[in-house]
Image (cartoon, rainbow, N blue to C red):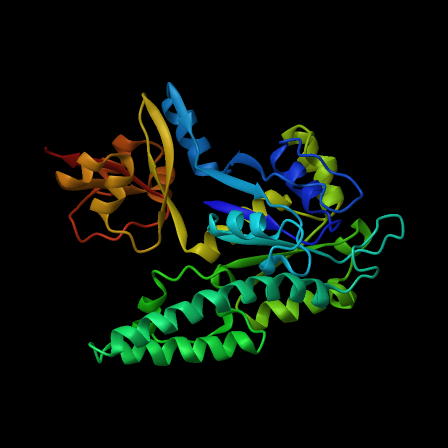
Length: 364
């Protein structure tokens, strides 16, 4: 999973990126501090994998990974190449989802590029640049579909769809909020619109607001309302707090979070939200040689999951030997799970479930 972190200059984006990844990206109080994208790869915490590692004491331990991309700050006119706009748009096309860091804290010592704190305006600034870029692409799709319609009447459905989508975008609304049928979704497969990418709004709060009553925090509530309207996710977060805990030991981090009344770090919450937003799950492979987590899309069948490990596994798929992690944990060992009949043989139509521990049988 690759998440692109975006936001206006000086909203705390690079501070949050550094805290989440410990990648050491430059962070300063002036616009365009981030010029080249920074990339940080983090392991996805998974207690199930830790349990299996204790059980097997493997030679190799490989959790799933998440890639964060800290993308250059954006200003008005990016879709026309203003500022670092062209680079911003190119970088954002490469990510699976967007973490849009929105400034919800007041601090006179940290300059805001527009001179005041207004999350709705900030969100609109970035959304409009994505939408303007999308409008050009959709117009090209309309022109192409109209040419096809001269010889293929089926293309008229595409013309109708993209004209309705263009009208939606022209109203300043993102492609995320455009309702479409399942058949119409197929028209979008080769039209990678930026404003259609899943979004997590990371509402960056000061520590007092973050640990206080969010119902009374007007900036957070403004972000929440926007997220709900366009089917996006929203997470309250404090970049400064994340920075403070980023270098702590696991024990100290847990104690610090407990003092703040928190159960999980911002990284854990972003990962969980990202998996949910993109419809991702993990299956596990375990043995003395290796314990590993594999990320797949929810609804993936066993042969395609096997293909994540190696293409030969999918081509020569015979069956999958599977036990649910919860069953293995309850039994205490693979042998006990087998004795109780909880180790199942599944065929080509089996849909993988989150936490499945699997060994694929194949022949090539």
